[in-house]
Length: 93
Image (cartoon, rainbow, N blue to C red; front, side, top):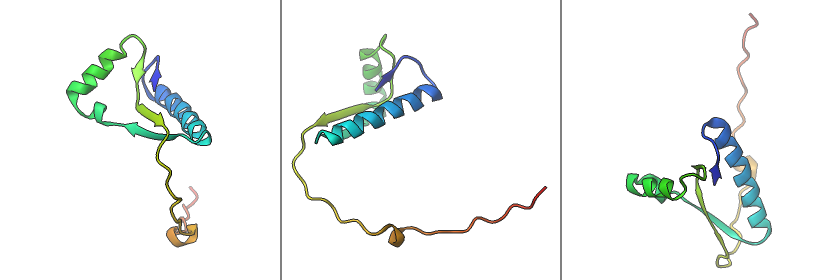
């Protein structure tokens, strides 16, 4: 994911676009996975940034393709894994 600028606003826009890409890929039956390793090492991060120099700020790499079929994993009801806590009242000032 690349944006033309840097900073918080660019990161939010990149996230919104990535959300759309992930949802569309899923709707089309494609598998996705993020590749974070190139960003973790200084040498590969420098190579990655050099490869995209002039195109914009690189935010993430995404692999998209057809994966092996898997069965759906069981999910517990939300009530089993959620704790509801009351928020203490703040005195009026």
